[in-house]
Length: 369
Image (tube, rainbow, N blue to C red):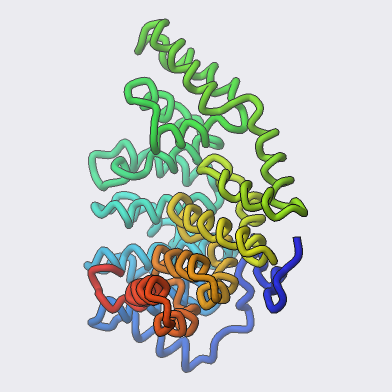
C-alpha cells in the first residue's frame, strides 16, 4: 500500500499521545481560558475542543469547573477535554481531582455526559478503581448511564469481577442484541471460557438450566473461538497489495474488530492509500469508529487526512469525509478551512455535506453542539 502523492501517512501518528509539549503562546491560552466563562455556549465548547487536543496547555481548574456547567452540551465537551488530559497526563498533580470529576459525571442526568465520562475512564489508571465506579453508576438509581452505557461496562468487565458479573446478570434477563451483545463481546473476547464458567456460577440460582444453556450457546456465537484468527486476517487484508482486498476489508470492519487498536490504526493509515476506493471505504469505517468508540486518539490522528480528502475531486470521498467531520463536531475545528473550501464547490452533494459539517463544528446552531 503506497501513500497518495502529497498524503503523509506517517503524519497521522497513529496511536500516539498528542505531541503538543511546545505549548501555545500564553496570550492564546489566556484568551481560550477566558472563553470558558463566556455567556455563549458555542465559545465555551470551541475552547474545550482546543484544550482537549492541546492537553499540555489545558487549565485544569477551569476545566473541572466547566464540567459542572448548567448547559449539558458544555458539560459533555468539558468531560471529553478532562478525559483527554487524564488519559495522557497520569503524573499531573491534579490527577485525583480529574478522576473525581469524571466519576461524578457518571451520575449526570444527561446520557451524553455520563457516556462521555465512561469513555474517558476507559483510558485512565487504575482501571480497576474506575471499573468499580462505573458499575456503581450503572446500578445507581441516579444518573442516566444505564440508558446508554452497557456496551462500555463490557470494556471494564475485562479487568473487574464486579463489572463481569453485572454483564452476566443483565445478559440473563435481556435479549442479547445491540449494545448488550457488544458488551458481552467486549467482556468475553479475551477469555470466553472464563466468561462461560461465570455464567454457570452467577446464574445457578437465577435461571434454570435450559435458559443458561441457551445463553451460553448465544455467547459462543457472539464470541467465536476463531476470533483471534479473524483479527489476523483483517490486519493482513488491510495491509494487502491489492486495493480491492483492502477496500473489502474496510467494509467488513465491524464493532467487534473496532475494539482492536491495531485495526483502528490500520484504518487511519488507509485514508492515505493511493487507491480511491480504499480511501472511500476507510472513511466510512472511520465514521463507524466515531459512532462506536467516540472521539479517541485514532480519530484525532485521522483529522489531517480527512481534511485533505474533504476537498478531493471525488464527490463520494469528499462528502463521506464531511459526514465524518459532522459526527466529530467541535474537535474538528482544525478542518474548518478545508470544510470552507468544500462548502463552495460546484458539487451540490459535497457543498451540502460540508455546510452541515461546518455548522456543527462551529456550533453555529447551539442546539446541535
